[in-house]
Length: 403
Image (cartoon, rainbow, N blue to C red; front, side, top):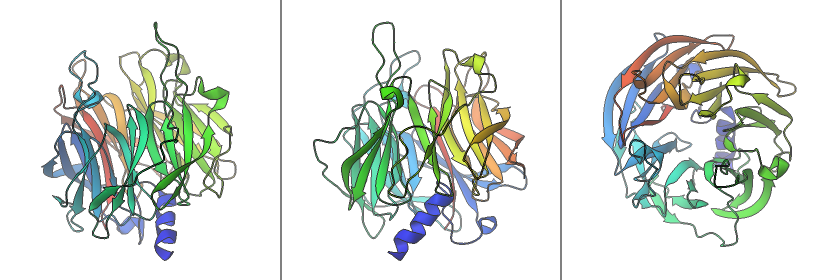
C-alpha cells in the first residue's frame, strides 16, 4: 500500500519525473531515439548543454520508452512497422517484428544495460507506460487498436502477457496510454482518423478502463459530439490531481477535463483552447502533438507540428489558473526545425528539450534546448543537429531523473 501511495504521488508530480528528494538535487539524463539507436546525453541545465554519453541498439526502430516508477529500469518499445520505418514518399509498413526490451539505468551515469529477454508484441506499439505500482507494462497499439499488458517481475524484468477479455472495445487508432494516478484506471487515447477524399471520418475517444492486477475492464468513453471532430492524441495529468489535459491532433486544440477520484473524467471539457499562435494556420499539415507540465503545474507546454514552411513548428506555453484549471497562452516559440513529435523537461523544470523529427528544406533534424524562466516562458539556447533519413527519424526523446 505504501509503495502504491508513493508511486501515485510521483506520477502526479510529472510524467518521467518521479522523485524522492528535492528536484533541484536530481540529475536528469536525456535519451533520444533515432531509428533503432537510443543515445544517452547528460543534461547541463545551467548552460543549456547536452553531452553525448553512449548508444545502445534495439532490434528495430524505437517507438516510445517509459521508466519504471523506481527509475531503476527503462522499458523501450520497438517495431519495424509504422511511420518511423516509412520509405520516402511511401506509406507506413505494418511490420512483422515488434517488442519491448528492458534496460537497467546506472544511477550514477545514466548508462543503459540490457537485461532479461524482450517480450514479443502482436503489432506495432505506438506508446507504452507502466502502471502506478510498477508491476505491469501497458502497450497501446494503433493497427489494430488495442491494449496489451505484461507483468513486471520483482527483478524489473519483463514477464508474461496478461490475457484480456475479448469483449473490450479499444476504439479506432489507439495512440497513447496513460495510467491514472489513482492506480484504478487506464486511459487510452483513440485518435480515430480524419476524412479523406474516399473515406469518411473515423471518430475518436478517450477510452477509460478499470484496472486491477493487470486486468482491464470497460468503464467509460469520453467522446464529445460522438467522437467526430475529436482526434484526441495525448493526455497529461495536472500535478494537483484536479484535471486532465488532452491535445486534439487535427483540431490543434487542448481540452481540459475534470479528473474524478475514481479515475474517470468529466464527459465534456471544462475548457477548449487553440494550441496555435495564429489559428488561421490550422491548415493541411498542421497538427498538435505531445504535452507536458512543469513539476509544479503552473505551466503547460504543447508541441505544434508543421509539415511545411507555412505551418507552425513551435512550443506553446500556457499559464494554468490554479483555481479553475483554465490554460492561457503566454508564449509561442519556434523549435528551429520541423515536426517536433516529442519534447521533454528535466526533473527540476529548468530545461526543455525538443526533438525535431525530420530534416527538411535544408534544416536538419535535431535536439533544440531551451531554458525555462521563472515566468514559465522559454529561452532558446542551442540546437544539436541529428542525422536522419528513411528509417532514421528522431522519433522519441525523454529526460529521466536518475534514481
